[in-house]
Length: 311
Ligand code: RRO
Image 1 (spheres, rainbow, N blue to C red):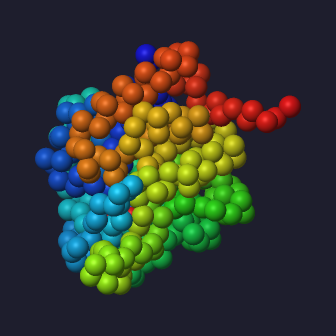
Image 2: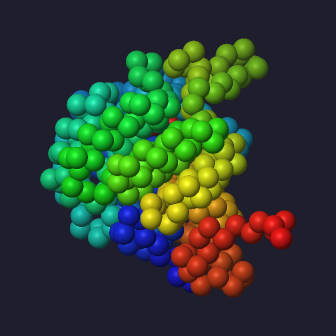
């Protein structure tokens, strides 16, 4: 079964890759992804300076997902520029993820990654876990300003990682910005921000930063992620590629994102739990489902949600 796909015109050998999130911060972790069946390598969101991130405990597995407030721990963008040249030999797309603390930081990282061996740049507009910084994807004025400047300096395909939206007005404003600034792909969704999980045995929040408020991930957020993928697919059409993220732990989940309109999916929580074997498993489960249903390719299946009640 052909499950190869394309994102922003770039070929991916299969439908499933890692998400910028767990286990993609160090060179060792990135090489593990490179050697796995993940069809691209996404690096941890980076900042200009290295960060140790938020105090622990900051990640907790939950029955149907996870909650975390990592606080952008990363080695600083210079390391990821350097890693990109070492990862090139694996012959699969390498995707940088940037999360500036100011517009200037975003721009200087784009300029550096322009000259690097990364194939695409994912601009993270949705990190929910920094006390000092609001989620830029919820401020369309700031987001528009940032993307206008970035699109002028970018020499590689630019994508944006979005927070979950709920109201159609939010979607429409963001779709307008995406089209206006020639964004090549979107990644939706980031974790659902500022959620609280309480441990009733200790009377405490399960994670420590921000008084326990953190990003909710995994199966809990799949319906929100699917709604975001579908709504953007309807607003943006086939010209702008979509990575679906949020609750993909099986081929069935991946198939749902494919029907919703995702060109490929990224896996975070399940990857943290299962390790790199998840990519091969989810890809092969997806291929099996497509075969049973008589589909031959990703492009033939993409967006094929059956609104069976329509006359
Ligand atoms: O590092 C984090 O705390 C983090 C980031 Br950058 C992000 O984009 N999304 C998230 O849930 N956590």
